[in-house]
Structure formats: C-alpha cells, structure tokens
Image 1 (cartoon, rainbow, N blue to C red):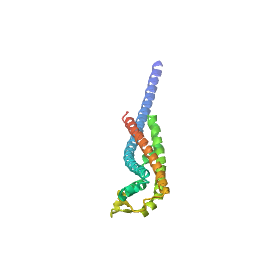
Image 2 (cartoon, rainbow, N blue to C red):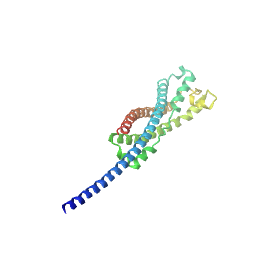
Image 3 (cartoon, one colour):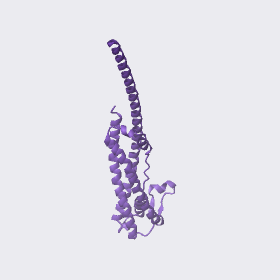
Image 4 (cartoon, rainbow, N blue to C red):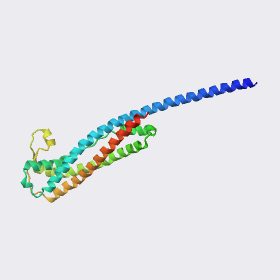
Length: 228
C-alpha cells in the first residue's frame, strides 16, 4: 500500500514539475519575445533621436545666425549709413528670414507606449526622459510657431525695402539681399526685431538643453538594449 501511494505521489510530482516547467519555458519564451520587440522599438527610437540631433544642430545654426544679425542691427541702428547696403540687407535678411520647422517622428514612441512594452524597460530614468523629451518637442514647436509669426510681421517691410541680388530661385535663401529703403528705419521695426530675437534666444537655449538630454537618452537606450 505504501509503495502504491509512493508511486502515485512520485507520478503526481513528475506531472506537476512537468506542467510547471512547461509554463516556465512558455513564459520565458514569451518574455524574451516581448523583450526583443521592446529593444526593436528602442532601436528605432534611437535612430529617430539621432535624426532629431542632426535637425536640432541645423536649427541651432539658423537661429544663432538670426540672433547674431539681430544683435548687429540693434547695435548699429543709428549708424546704418556707415555700412554698405549689401551688409545692411544681409543682416536684415538673416534676422527676419531665418526660421525653422522641427519635424519629429513620434510614431515609434507611441507604439512603445500603446503596446505596454514601456513597462519592460528596466531603467526608470530612461522612461521619464523619453516622456519628457516628447513633451518638450510639443513646447519647442510652439516656440517655433511664435518665431515664424514674428518673422511674417517683418517680411512686408523687408519686401518693400530690399531687393534680391541673385536672379536664381535659390538666391532667396542665401540672404543675398540689398537694402534699398530709407536707412532711418522706424523704431517699431526694431521693436519687432527685438521681439523675434528674444524668441530666437529662448529657442536656442531649448535646443542646447534638448541636445544635451538627447545625448543622455542615447546612452541609456544603448545600455538598456545591451543589458541582457
């Protein structure tokens, strides 16, 4: 009787162990699959961030050039006649025309959010930094819109008081403009330039901070992907 009980007990243990092992293996395989998909999404986000960094460096150059020309105009507004009209036209063009349109790709990040794979990321700081990044993108686009709006308010003045020195279509974007108007420029024009310059300055600060934070996120993603 004892041998029979022992036999059934051993069979029960073997069955339980087998079922448990089967569940463990299935769970392990499923987790590995999810982890792989998570890393796949992170790799794509990594590529998007590298594109963002490139675009932000270009935008940084644009807005820094615009701000520099705005400073030049403000500094020399009472003595513009001392400079060539080509120089004055160049700085007005840079101060007014240089704007940017930041276009980011948030699709992969939203996919990571909606799939639930975000919960598989072990580094909580990475999760927070990704959330912060895409929230800041929305804010940065708002600042860009303010800059573009202020640029548009100055374009009519520029169109009336300058001429393009290059006959090609691309010449418009090379700032080859000669100032043809009265060099005694109204204060309200400079007020608008100062207004735009402030937003350029603020946007430059935002870009620099974003570049620094994106570099950190890249390190965190690489570490997350290569942890296992």
